[in-house]
Length: 280
Image (cartoon, rainbow, N blue to C red):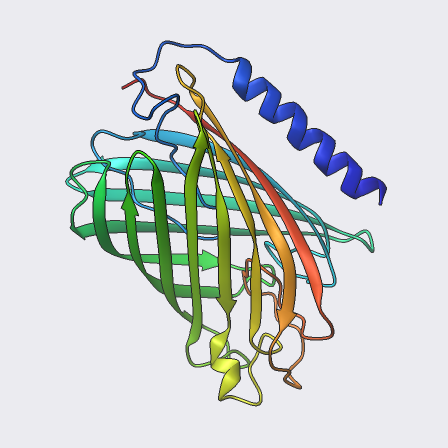
């Protein structure tokens, strides 16, 4: 309970700090800016007139949903996101987890995504495909492909991902399937609110021995604040984790947003602060 209160207090402090920053950025929303990463469980692409480079710092607390980034304990992640030009987006992160039992583990991941539809303007439809690689908590390497789709307007936004991953270990699945979707509507000024949904290891619906414990689902609220004239933006999301199927496979160290143990239902709560490195 103390860890939960600490995480919430830390998130509130960071949000207050974000609201207080004034650096003269050009406003792009009524009362706010376009954030580099509005959703926590879906990766979006950048454009030439949205954030060029940003550093994201996120903190996660979870129970009964072990594994990154739904670590069963406290989890910290640092990510770098940048626009490479010609509709290419780079996204890389490093994750450090502090388990409830005292253990510490780390994982790294990097990918490049290119928009093939849209991607030249911040508003409108965008559709992209990307490739990436990671090293998980058990030092197993993997390659993955991410399909992204999003639509943004001054008053509302939505985005989703479909991810296919191949881990290079004999005890892992042939292909892992992860999908996500988020929607947010502007409430007032720079404040957007909505929901996020994630379906993880969906191959568990047809594979009884799915390597990450079975298919898992998450649905919960999502809030993003990107104040006008500020390089900071703040996001928070989370909710209950439902284990839709169960497998008999042992726990793997695969990188997963909402955990990889199908023992019982749990929850995860995640907060993130993003700092734009470059002015518009």
